[in-house]
Length: 600
Image (tube, rainbow, N blue to C red; front, side, top):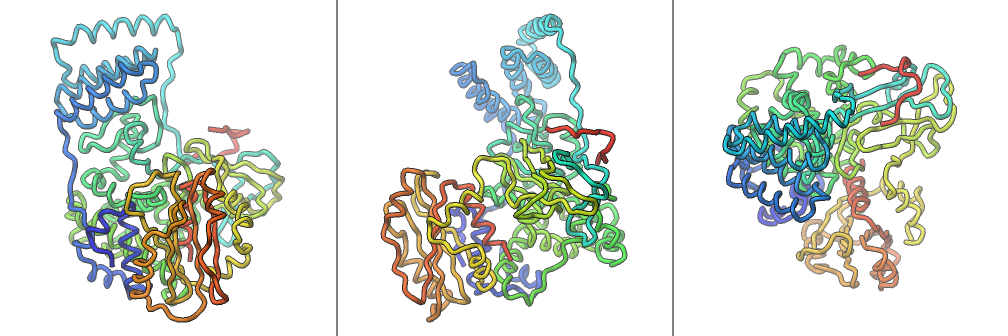
């Protein structure tokens, strides 16, 4: 297992710890989660608990940085607004720094002719201890803003929060419970499903640009959490919904979670799983005995298989009903099961056991063990439940996830910002299932582009790869070169070990050198006991356009009859991470007729 000081330096420490522990166990899963918890020691996770406290001095510094940024680029205020938002988050409740932050933001909105936003921030500044000696300037801005708003004569638009989902009334769960079908014929071009995320997690760098609950940008006009420095909201309603659903548990550990889910974007899928898990915690706290009955009694579990008849608050019970445990005797899934067990324990320890806002409330509650089991089953199905291909957020769409994936789909799923829209590409007959492409269309770069290039990289056809996946126990490790290298300029080697206990690693760089080859090969030998037999070496390299030709002409590793060499060139890091994640865990468009909808 990797030493704690090594784990601390990894780009993705949680998955790195889970993977290294799995390798040290030779991919043998634990007998149960209790055994994994017994063997887990807190020292394995090298990050001490901590929370960034609000600080007026830091708030003042950030506000001054915002002032400098705005003076430098007054026509591009986004950077200044982001710094003002950080200042607002950092300011203590009741301090003048909070009022000053809102006042400075009101000035930017005024100069940007966002008069309503300006007035809102003037009111926030006034109600948050804006210095009395500076009040005349603020009141003068308020008067000018009101006059300009009247002259603008624009209609007032109230922001309203809608339900997260709208579904064609003819859609229903298929008979096998694994898809969505229609009970009447549908025509080409009909929009059958529109969803906002039921749960989402923003990228950390967008915390001061978007609402943590709904993902809206809202012109950077956001309000802070009173308890932490890491999240903001577009409205009091979103703030209250967030507090009720998940932030009452996360506020105390928000900085611990940022470390826990640090790494490639795919790692944020685990945070989405945790936010789904909080819904189960809420049900347990509300009615412990009723919770146990609903998730453990077969007749009760059956009631939650059809999401079309459920309230959103019961979606977690639907997931419980449709995510049974995967048999432990399935040798093909041993690696994924072991990694998932370790990730479950790590997340449970950091987010639950060490959470002073939650753990005391769970003391003595029946059904506490059921939470751990449910978290594990959700983690085992992370990729099937969560959509992480958007640039700025990772989301859970309760209904879109049920759509069957097909090579010949009859519908297309589009992601526009955070909104998922499903449109029919061809007529669908009564009783027929709705199916979408395996690749969601929302971005000019897709995994299928990589698949189209595989022929140039001597990769076998899809049938051969599927056969390999069935035969091999895959262990994926991402080794980080010891120096900091630019994201899109350097080929990062990803190496897989395959075929029982055999292991062969290669780390590839653009200059054709193999980084740490001897060290890693020795490690693989010590950990796995290399023996004769067929080895599968897969090298996936990341590069830019200029470097690709060089990589293709580089001398490849020697290959004999006992080895198979596969090489894939990937031009984009997001695709690289997606491929890695799949291998590791593999085992605003309106509807035509608003009357023909079920609003949830």
